[in-house]
Length: 89
Image (cartoon, rainbow, N blue to C red; front, top):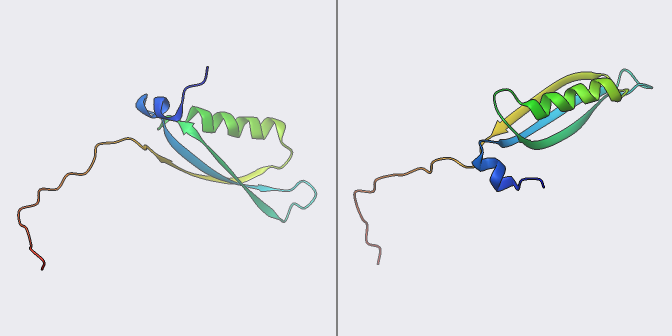
């Protein structure tokens, strides 16, 4: 059974989003983009690099470039000490 997104985040996974630019086999001068998103572990990103390897082996459109971002969704909250109070009538 697959883990839920909350279970993955509690295990240290974060949401990774990658935009891949690739060339069409029939139109090599045209760049297209594909967006991929999954929960992954930083800094190694095994799922992202596994998908890139799959792309290079199985898909005809050669990759031009890949840019990605990673964000942990669960983290310590911000706390701010409030010293004063303003009364508004």
